[in-house]
Image (cartoon, rainbow, N blue to C red):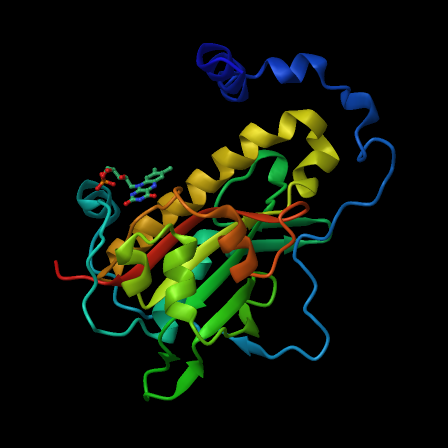
Length: 258
Ligand SMILES: Cc1cc2nc3c(=O)[nH]c(=O)nc-3n(C[C@H](O)[C@H](O)[C@H](O)COP(=O)(O)O)c2cc1C
């Protein structure tokens, strides 16, 4: 396809013309098909580790100061990110603020409250509690927003290298003690919005990452949004099929100097 034509076709993604040709009367929701689960099931026998309560964490700045200071950070110190701090970051990005039957509301907005995202963490260093005890060993973990816990998935031998390769060898990602990988399960949104789902899924991801930037700022951590990544390598790292669920965004996190 010639370049100009390709660009014009791709620009359509940013517009909302798709709404006009979407048959909202016949969405899966309106056909009475049950709502997809708000959280992926926990694999049978999987290790589930509750996250500690983050309340009481000293936050370093007021919201206006955090917004004013927000920037992408690609250099991290050797200081570890604690389990309480990780708990705070997960709450800020995908935490549940209200759980009513059929309506789970979170700390970030989402079109139609569909929340197609799942959060995976690549921990290249152990995450410890205040007493120095390891709560989360290195490996790939998935966040369980309903339980505010992490479930362990696997740990490849060459984890650092795999994380770095998933981010197209952007060196700072491989050097971070932990990296968020957000996937989308598009059907959660398609169930209600059919063809009008995909732009709003991308918009949803922006809100998640912005909360990560601000929450990191509050606890002397830094992050950098990463949208340039190797799709098959990232999907393989978090063990998703690349069709019904795939990585859409990444963000390494580490401690930073002010
Ligand atoms: C959607 C998105 C994708 C990005 N992808 C990358 C990336 O792959 N690698 C990178 O180093 N920075 C990435 N960034 C960070 C931008 O380069 C950064 O936000 C920009 O240079 C402005 O700097 P600031 O965030 O410090 O204000 C991305 C930012 C956004 C919002």
